[in-house]
Image (cartoon, rainbow, N blue to C red; front, side, top):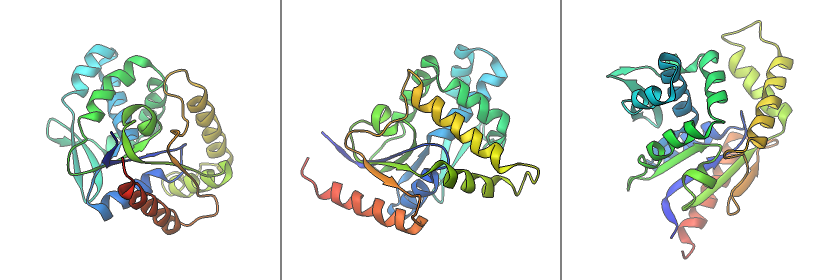
Length: 221
């Protein structure tokens, strides 16, 4: 039976799925699950312990809190979200995410976040692996050049020496890694709405996503 209280948004790097997830969570008063941030939290734990078993034990003490549809990560009462934004953590998370042991440690943690309040989950395998019973599934993508422009505009404020070519190459490499990995490869769920946002504004994407959500709510399941 389909769960109408869960919305999954999957897609490649810099496709805009994070922004869409936050807007949907805010408008619908749902909880937000940023799975990318969770993988960074696991990488943060692994960086400390250098061992999957010890990292998993530390990760299970992590607390997730939503504030105004923004997900924050806490360790022993301290907000460590800013620490998880460093590129070193991002690259380690990307490497660890390809391992079965990592995904198994995070699977139950993510599923336990679902409740009757409603959940918007964004990532790369939310609709295919983590929440296959979600009624509303969206796969958001865009051309590599557009995604690179978006990511470049986001990062150049804090790193003026960053080059567009560097960002574009990084996105291409991440796409290849995500699409070709053996464990949970990046691909749309069979019942997902595919949205190509290359020539769409954020508002247009949000309108399309909301329309799909309403349609899924009204479908007989």
